[in-house]
Amino acid sequence: MGNIGKLIFNAVKKSYAITTDGVSRMPKGLKFDMKNPYILEALSENKIDEFVKFDGQDLKTVCDILDNPQIRKGFDEGELKALYKKAFPYKVPADPNCDAMVYLCSLPESIGSKFDAHGLAKIGVTDQLKQLNNLLTNGIDKTRTFYTAPLVAPKGVGAGLGTAGSAYRDGSFIIVADKGKSLVDDGIKHVIVNDAYYNIIDDLRRKFTDINFVRADKAAEYFTRL
Image (tube, rainbow, N blue to C red; front, top):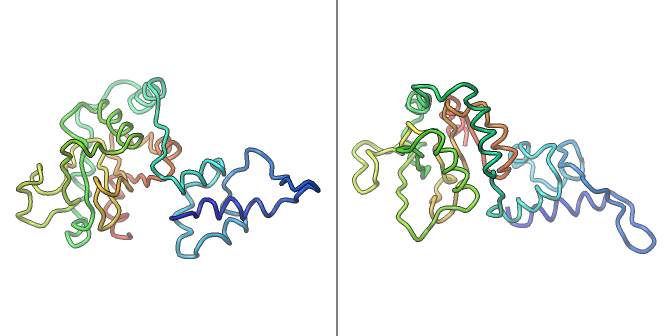
């Protein structure tokens, strides 16, 4: 997005009076408001939908993230424990994470093959949230082998990918790059949240505002629309 954050911030700043000594009267704690005409004016019409998720969040924080998407602050240990309790008030269900396996079957290969992905699986359900938090906070460690695969792989593809073909779907999360991009080289753009963690999606969105989080049962529709 280049310097869109700076453009937005300066557009809002111009809407406030300047004192005689040249200091802006811009108040502290301003929110990113999608009804603000100065913000809308700074956005391209075909890009407005991409910014709705920031509505109501701190303006300065959003603008900083837009210009520096890799600068993120993840959940601390206390926050993670609270999220576990919110996700599983009684206990981890015996058979979580079925939705991605069911609903991604309707995503056409012609679309799913354009998205580089990695499913967080092979570890415990609670550990998967911790792993996601680390990946979104610190990024993918490029010094270690990190296997990726198409979100939907063409038939027969899988050798050398470290998967049976498509990215694993039986974990709590699937991290996905932007269309035509590489997870390792270009970073994480989307996260498919499987059914185990549906009720903390809003918490994830508030913490990692530059990432698009989508429910697994809505993923086929979401990526088709992209």
